[in-house]
Amino acid sequence: MSDILLPAPAIARGVCRLFGEMGCGTLTEFTIANGRRLDVLALHGDGRLTGVEIKSGVRDFRADRKWRDYLDFCDAFYFAVAEDFPLALLPDECGIVVADTYAATVLRAAPSQALHAARRKAVTLRFALTASARLRGWEDPQI
Image (cartoon, rainbow, N blue to C red; front, top):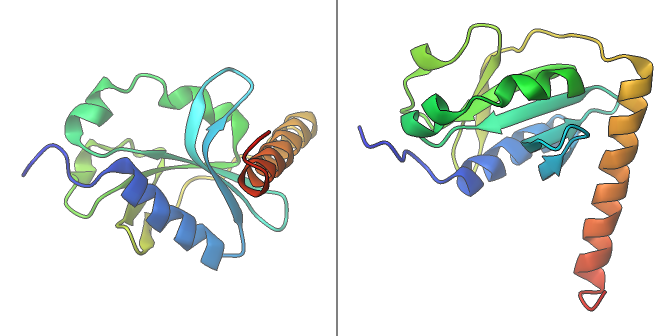
């Protein structure tokens, strides 16, 4: 097994497709208030927030000491990996998504924890403003 199983952008695409099929909006490379950057943040229609950290290989996972910093900013948290990632390495307290460029599947549901209302509002507003800025940049690249 090679250490680089699938590039992170390919996994992100599959993850975003999965959450899109679930009726969620998604943003990649989403910066949260503590300065950390989630690989994917999904906003559900009912306001729930799901964070996803992508691991493209074993070395990437073993070097990551920051994933717990995301937990206070989402209702559920997943690791997303390629099909041949050794799943036994992933912590039991997180959900698991297996993805490729075209699709993704939830292998283990993430435990749910309700965010405090003020934190939810702040993250949701940041999500909306980030999405708007990205769309604006796409529509008017000169700004």
